[in-house]
Length: 111
Length: 112
Image (cartoon, rainbow over all chains, first blue to last red; front, side, top):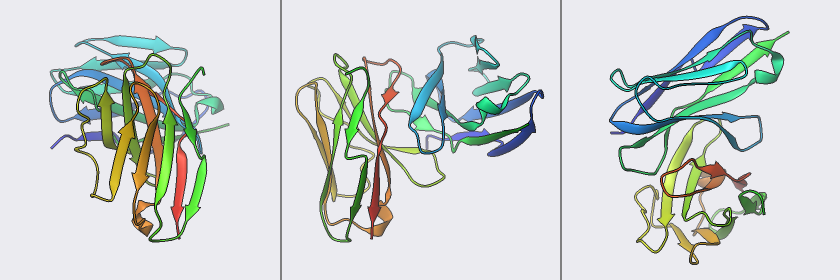
Protein backbone atom coordinates (compact mmCIF):
# COMPACT_ATOMS: atom_id res chain seq x y z
CA UNK A 1 0.00 0.00 0.00
CA UNK A 2 1.27 3.45 -0.89
CA UNK A 3 1.63 5.46 2.26
CA UNK A 4 3.04 8.78 3.38
CA UNK A 5 3.42 9.64 7.04
CA UNK A 6 4.08 13.15 8.20
CA UNK A 7 4.93 14.25 11.67
CA UNK A 8 4.06 16.22 13.53
CA UNK A 9 0.49 16.73 12.34
CA UNK A 10 0.13 19.88 14.40
CA UNK A 11 2.95 22.28 15.19
CA UNK A 12 2.72 25.48 17.17
CA UNK A 13 5.88 27.47 17.39
CA UNK A 14 7.09 30.91 18.28
CA UNK A 15 8.47 33.37 15.82
CA UNK A 16 12.21 33.13 15.50
CA UNK A 17 12.41 29.43 16.35
CA UNK A 18 13.58 26.57 14.14
CA UNK A 19 11.76 23.30 13.53
CA UNK A 20 11.67 20.31 11.19
CA UNK A 21 8.72 18.49 9.65
CA UNK A 22 9.34 14.85 8.71
CA UNK A 23 7.86 12.90 5.85
CA UNK A 24 8.30 9.12 5.49
CA UNK A 25 7.07 7.34 2.39
CA UNK A 26 6.52 3.69 1.75
CA UNK A 27 7.89 2.77 -1.65
CA UNK A 28 10.42 3.66 -4.29
CA UNK A 29 9.86 7.14 -5.56
CA UNK A 30 11.55 9.34 -8.09
CA UNK A 31 9.94 12.58 -7.02
CA UNK A 32 9.06 14.08 -3.67
CA UNK A 33 7.02 17.26 -3.45
CA UNK A 34 6.24 19.76 -0.77
CA UNK A 35 3.10 21.88 -1.04
CA UNK A 36 1.69 24.67 1.09
CA UNK A 37 -2.03 25.21 1.67
CA UNK A 38 -3.48 28.30 3.33
CA UNK A 39 -6.94 27.99 4.95
CA UNK A 40 -9.67 27.82 2.34
CA UNK A 41 -7.14 27.99 -0.48
CA UNK A 42 -5.66 25.58 -2.96
CA UNK A 43 -2.19 24.03 -2.90
CA UNK A 44 0.93 25.95 -3.82
CA UNK A 45 3.98 24.05 -4.99
CA UNK A 46 7.06 24.73 -2.84
CA UNK A 47 9.70 22.17 -3.78
CA UNK A 48 10.29 19.15 -5.94
CA UNK A 49 13.14 16.86 -4.97
CA UNK A 50 14.39 14.49 -7.60
CA UNK A 51 17.37 12.57 -6.28
CA UNK A 52 19.02 11.22 -3.18
CA UNK A 53 20.70 13.98 -1.22
CA UNK A 54 18.77 16.74 -2.98
CA UNK A 55 18.45 19.91 -0.96
CA UNK A 56 16.46 22.95 -1.96
CA UNK A 57 16.00 26.23 -0.13
CA UNK A 58 13.57 29.08 -0.54
CA UNK A 59 13.65 31.81 2.05
CA UNK A 60 13.21 30.31 5.51
CA UNK A 61 12.28 26.87 4.18
CA UNK A 62 14.70 24.13 3.24
CA UNK A 63 13.70 20.69 1.97
CA UNK A 64 15.88 17.61 1.70
CA UNK A 65 15.52 14.06 0.46
CA UNK A 66 17.09 10.78 1.55
CA UNK A 67 15.81 8.10 -0.83
CA UNK A 68 17.57 5.27 0.99
CA UNK A 69 15.74 6.10 4.21
CA UNK A 70 12.60 7.10 2.25
CA UNK A 71 12.59 10.31 4.24
CA UNK A 72 12.15 13.94 3.36
CA UNK A 73 12.40 16.85 5.75
CA UNK A 74 11.15 20.43 5.63
CA UNK A 75 13.20 22.64 7.89
CA UNK A 76 11.92 26.00 9.03
CA UNK A 77 14.47 28.58 10.09
CA UNK A 78 13.60 31.58 12.25
CA UNK A 79 9.87 31.16 11.73
CA UNK A 80 7.65 34.14 10.98
CA UNK A 81 3.87 34.43 11.23
CA UNK A 82 3.46 34.39 7.44
CA UNK A 83 4.62 30.78 7.38
CA UNK A 84 1.46 29.69 9.21
CA UNK A 85 -0.24 27.19 6.87
CA UNK A 86 -0.64 23.46 6.30
CA UNK A 87 2.30 21.77 4.63
CA UNK A 88 1.89 18.57 2.65
CA UNK A 89 4.49 16.22 1.33
CA UNK A 90 3.57 13.99 -1.58
CA UNK A 91 5.37 11.53 -3.80
CA UNK A 92 5.01 9.82 -7.12
CA UNK A 93 6.07 6.23 -7.61
CA UNK A 94 8.96 5.59 -9.94
CA UNK A 95 7.75 6.25 -13.49
CA UNK A 96 4.34 7.11 -12.12
CA UNK A 97 2.41 10.30 -12.06
CA UNK A 98 -0.32 10.34 -9.47
CA UNK A 99 0.55 11.98 -6.19
CA UNK A 100 0.15 10.21 -2.85
CA UNK A 101 -0.19 12.78 -0.09
CA UNK A 102 0.61 12.82 3.58
CA UNK A 103 -2.01 14.03 6.06
CA UNK A 104 -0.43 17.45 6.29
CA UNK A 105 1.27 19.37 9.07
CA UNK A 106 -0.72 22.32 10.35
CA UNK A 107 1.82 24.94 11.34
CA UNK A 108 0.94 27.91 13.52
CA UNK A 109 3.61 30.52 14.16
CA UNK A 110 2.79 32.68 17.14
CA UNK A 111 4.15 36.23 17.54
CA UNK B 1 -5.58 31.68 -18.45
CA UNK B 2 -2.55 31.71 -16.23
CA UNK B 3 -3.60 28.91 -13.93
CA UNK B 4 -5.98 26.01 -13.45
CA UNK B 5 -9.56 27.14 -13.07
CA UNK B 6 -12.49 25.24 -11.63
CA UNK B 7 -16.21 25.84 -11.50
CA UNK B 8 -18.37 26.17 -9.58
CA UNK B 9 -16.33 27.31 -6.60
CA UNK B 10 -19.08 26.15 -4.25
CA UNK B 11 -21.92 23.70 -4.75
CA UNK B 12 -24.67 22.76 -2.32
CA UNK B 13 -26.88 19.89 -3.38
CA UNK B 14 -29.39 17.51 -1.94
CA UNK B 15 -28.67 13.88 -1.34
CA UNK B 16 -29.50 11.81 -4.40
CA UNK B 17 -28.92 14.57 -6.96
CA UNK B 18 -26.23 14.48 -9.64
CA UNK B 19 -23.49 17.12 -9.80
CA UNK B 20 -20.97 18.11 -12.46
CA UNK B 21 -17.69 19.80 -11.64
CA UNK B 22 -15.56 21.46 -14.28
CA UNK B 23 -11.83 21.94 -14.63
CA UNK B 24 -9.91 24.05 -17.14
CA UNK B 25 -6.23 23.08 -17.08
CA UNK B 26 -3.26 25.25 -17.88
CA UNK B 27 -2.93 25.57 -21.64
CA UNK B 28 -0.48 23.03 -23.04
CA UNK B 29 -0.56 20.73 -20.03
CA UNK B 30 -1.12 17.21 -21.24
CA UNK B 31 -1.87 15.66 -17.86
CA UNK B 32 -4.94 16.38 -15.75
CA UNK B 33 -5.77 15.00 -12.31
CA UNK B 34 -8.72 15.02 -9.96
CA UNK B 35 -8.25 14.74 -6.20
CA UNK B 36 -10.63 14.90 -3.27
CA UNK B 37 -9.87 16.53 0.08
CA UNK B 38 -12.09 15.82 3.03
CA UNK B 39 -12.12 18.29 5.88
CA UNK B 40 -8.80 18.33 7.73
CA UNK B 41 -7.28 15.59 5.62
CA UNK B 42 -4.80 15.15 2.84
CA UNK B 43 -5.71 14.70 -0.79
CA UNK B 44 -6.99 11.43 -2.25
CA UNK B 45 -6.32 10.66 -5.89
CA UNK B 46 -9.41 10.06 -8.00
CA UNK B 47 -8.53 9.94 -11.70
CA UNK B 48 -5.75 10.90 -14.12
CA UNK B 49 -5.80 11.76 -17.82
CA UNK B 50 -2.68 11.84 -19.97
CA UNK B 51 -3.02 12.84 -23.60
CA UNK B 52 -4.95 10.26 -25.60
CA UNK B 53 -4.11 7.37 -23.28
CA UNK B 54 -6.81 5.54 -21.37
CA UNK B 55 -7.43 7.35 -18.08
CA UNK B 56 -6.24 5.90 -14.76
CA UNK B 57 -9.52 5.53 -12.88
CA UNK B 58 -8.11 3.50 -10.03
CA UNK B 59 -8.89 6.14 -7.38
CA UNK B 60 -12.59 6.54 -8.09
CA UNK B 61 -14.38 5.46 -4.90
CA UNK B 62 -17.49 4.03 -6.52
CA UNK B 63 -19.28 3.69 -9.86
CA UNK B 64 -21.24 6.84 -9.00
CA UNK B 65 -18.10 8.79 -9.91
CA UNK B 66 -17.01 9.35 -13.49
CA UNK B 67 -14.93 11.87 -15.40
CA UNK B 68 -14.31 12.86 -18.96
CA UNK B 69 -11.78 15.00 -20.72
CA UNK B 70 -12.09 16.59 -24.12
CA UNK B 71 -8.75 16.23 -25.88
CA UNK B 72 -6.16 18.07 -23.82
CA UNK B 73 -8.54 20.64 -22.46
CA UNK B 74 -11.58 20.78 -20.22
CA UNK B 75 -12.51 17.96 -17.87
CA UNK B 76 -15.75 17.29 -16.02
CA UNK B 77 -16.13 15.15 -12.92
CA UNK B 78 -19.63 13.80 -12.44
CA UNK B 79 -21.00 12.41 -9.21
CA UNK B 80 -24.32 10.63 -9.55
CA UNK B 81 -26.82 10.12 -6.74
CA UNK B 82 -24.71 12.14 -4.31
CA UNK B 83 -24.32 10.98 -0.74
CA UNK B 84 -23.36 12.99 2.34
CA UNK B 85 -19.95 11.32 2.44
CA UNK B 86 -19.24 12.90 -0.95
CA UNK B 87 -19.00 16.30 0.76
CA UNK B 88 -15.44 17.50 0.25
CA UNK B 89 -13.29 19.86 -1.75
CA UNK B 90 -12.63 18.52 -5.24
CA UNK B 91 -9.31 19.72 -6.60
CA UNK B 92 -8.12 19.56 -10.15
CA UNK B 93 -4.46 19.76 -11.14
CA UNK B 94 -2.62 19.82 -14.42
CA UNK B 95 0.96 19.28 -15.46
CA UNK B 96 3.31 18.58 -18.26
CA UNK B 97 4.03 14.85 -18.36
CA UNK B 98 5.71 13.70 -15.12
CA UNK B 99 6.27 17.27 -13.97
CA UNK B 100 5.02 19.37 -11.06
CA UNK B 101 1.26 19.43 -10.70
CA UNK B 102 -0.40 22.83 -10.42
CA UNK B 103 -3.67 22.92 -8.56
CA UNK B 104 -6.85 24.85 -9.17
CA UNK B 105 -8.83 26.59 -6.41
CA UNK B 106 -11.15 23.65 -5.91
CA UNK B 107 -14.91 23.12 -5.80
CA UNK B 108 -16.38 22.90 -2.32
CA UNK B 109 -19.22 20.38 -2.47
CA UNK B 110 -21.75 20.07 0.33
CA UNK B 111 -24.36 17.34 0.16
CA UNK B 112 -27.29 17.92 2.49
